[in-house]
Picture: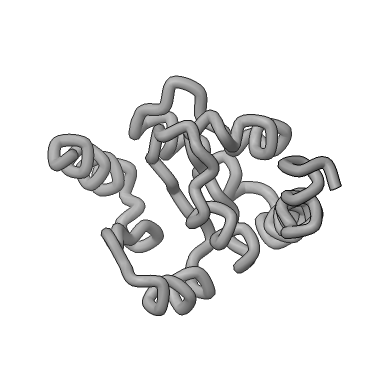
Amino acid sequence: DPNYFTRMERLVEALQLTEHIRFVGARTQEELVPLYTKAGFFLNTSMTQSMDKVVLEAVLSGVVPVTGNRAFKDLLTPYSLYVENATPELYAETIMTASQNDTNQLAQKLCDTVARSHSLHTFTQRIFGI
């Protein structure tokens, strides 16, 4: 949505966060890995209500996710990283608040949870009961 993107860019400028936030747009799988290693936060604005693989990849790469996607509500709410009724302003506020904490420790907790809860073994147990 071009209007939404423009609002996000303006908000980043208004909050004087241009040195900290970079919009990278669509990327190939190969391009994502180096970006994950440089990122502190991963903002996913998708509202598909399905568990987007890219969010899980970011978490497993040590990046703290922020999203309003309901599929991640249970995982992220305990860490105040799920944004109900998401707006650009609420996303920005969530990231600013989270950045005041130890994000390395938070990233590790989330990584451990995702690795434990979303492994192939766990997945097959949930789907097939085996």
